[in-house]
Length: 494
Image (cartoon, rainbow, N blue to C red; front, side, top):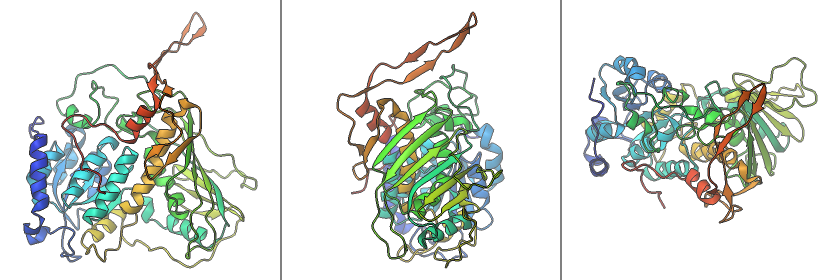
C-alpha cells in the first residue's frame, strides 16, 4: 500500500500539468487523445478516481475493451479490493499526484468521487486535454457546472455524465412523444423520488479517530476542514451539504433528465423550495422545489409550442397527487421515482430513467424515431466518442453540452431549499448566475442544532440558530464555492 501522506504541492501540480497539456502533441501515438487518431478497435488508457462504488461499476463496463492504467481512491478500506482487481493499474491516493506522474499516459478519466470533488478532478483533467466521464450529479454548484460545460467545449474532449438512463429507450420515447405533439403543450411537470435511503436531517456528529486506511484530508479536498466521523463516508456523504446534494443530486439527474431534454429547457427564471427542518450541515428528510422555465422559441422539429412550464420536485417519500383518471391500485413509483407531464391533450407518465412511459388516456403513440439509439452501454458510448475526431464526433447521450446546463437545474433545487428562509420566490438570471431579488442587506438564519427532547412528558424545543448571515453573500458562496487553500480549478473560459 502506498503511503497515504504522499502528496504533490499545488505549485508542482499546476506547473507539471500545464507542461503535460502543452506537450500533448509529443505523447506516444498509442495515447493520442481527442485528435481523431484512434481506430474504434484501439484501446483507451483510462484512469479511475473513486473506485469503491459506482466508479468500479463504470470501470467494469469498460475494462474488457479498454486499458485501465491507474486507479485512485482516498479510502483504501472501501476501495482496495476493487483497486487490486485492475492488476496492471498503478494505485494512488491523490488524483493530483496521479495526473502529475501519469498525465502523458492517460487518455481519459472516470470520476465517481463525492459530489464536492467532481468538478476539481474533472476540470483539471479536461484542462490537460483528457476525456472525462463523471458520475451524477455532474458538480456540486452552478458555477462548477458552467465551468465544465465551457472547458469541455474549449478543449474539444468527449464527455459524459453518469445518468445512464439517458442512453435507454424510455428517454428516447418520452422525447419523441412530446416532440410529435402526442400530449399537446406542456405547462406543468411533477416529479419525485423515494430517496433518501441514507441518513439525513442530522445534527453535526462528534469527532472520531480517522482510520489508517482513510486519508481524511484528501476526502475533504476543496471543502472546509471538519473533524472526521464515520457517518460521512463512504456513501452517506450525499446527505451532508459540504459533500453532497441530498436526494436531489442523487436522483434528479436520473428522473428529471427526460423533462429537461424533452422540453428543451434552458435556465429557470424563478425558484422556490420548502422542506422538513432545514439544518446548516445536513440535508432535510424531505423537500419540495418549484422551478419556472420561460417559453422556448418555436422549433422546426417540434409539432407543438414550448410555453412557460412549471416543474415541481418532491423527495423524502412525498409524491404528487394522482390526477383524475389514474388507474386504481397503480403505484406511481417505478424504479425509485416518477414523472407526470401535464399536457393540454393528455398526460405522459414515466418512471426513473424515463422507464416505461405511458399515457393516462391509455393510447399507445405510434411515432417516428428521431432520437439516436445507443446499442452499447452508457460508458461504452462515451468510449466510442473519445476515439472520434472532435470535428465529426457523434456526442454521447449525456455530453456536457447538455449535462452541464441540466445539472444546473438540479443544483438550483438545492439553492432553493437552502434559501427558503427568505420566504419568497427567488428570481434567477441564468446567464449571470445570480439571484436578482435578494437585497444587499437581507439576512438569513438557519438551524445549527435541533435539540428537541421530552422532559417530564412534555416536548421541549431548544433549537440553536446561526447568527444572522448576509443572504446575498451566503447565496453567492453556494453558487460558487470558495475552495480550501491548496485546491484550485482552471479559470472560466470566456
